[in-house]
Image (cartoon, rainbow, N blue to C red; front, side):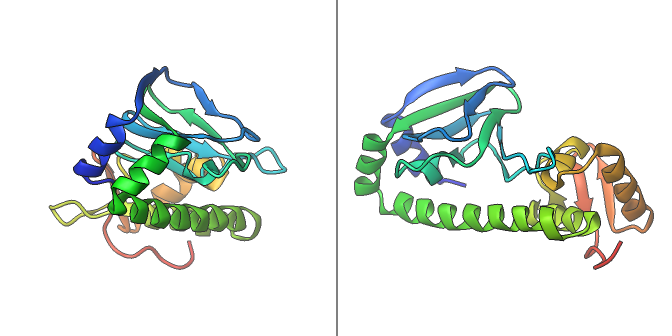
Length: 205
């Protein structure tokens, strides 16, 4: 997540825009020249595989950005759609270059974000082709896990069954079955906060 100081520098050079839920912000094949910094809401980045399944590459939240992979002019390889009403600060390439010159911290953050998301996209695509459903589920839960101040490991910010199904490219019923089995084995717990990982998930379901 961006620091407050870097987010303010970006916002100062950006144009504020608001989008309704379900708005497609980037189409596959678009030549990107915009960086979107999310100030409220969230978006989903995903392709479609050859079988028509959708697998989520990433869900981007407030104080994060997207569009960095296409700033060099390369066509987008994925779609970006708003999951809920979303507000963004939008920067053109020229503005991004000015911020890079002004803030080395943002330059380092941008570099690490590009590397991390490229790796995650590769792992997601590889998992869809090679891994079993349980291995994809396990990977999605563990990759999204965070540790709040109370010590519980949360699988993302209120990660839902539809979110998980989209990330692993399989139906909600199958995801529900696996989650129930893991909950019965006391590997995880579902509550109003989301999914808490109680202990390490087993290698095999």
